[in-house]
Amino acid sequence: MIKEKRKDLGYTQQQMADILKISLRQYVRIDTEEDLPRKDLLHELINFLKLTDSEIGEYIRSITHKSA
Image (tube, rainbow, N blue to C red):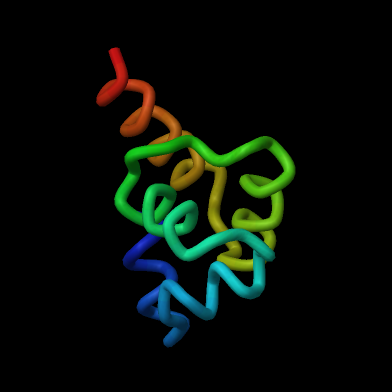
């Protein structure tokens, strides 16, 4: 879901990593839903990608379900 929003806005993974001031590797883990970002990064993503409450919930459930 993060990946789709990023692509809809026309950003590459590297551009998003640069915007968030994190490594490309760290961003890829967020983009592929392997890792839940830190609270501050999640807040930045929400604002930057203009995620809805529903999308945020879906993203968090997806990640926590994978790690369970």
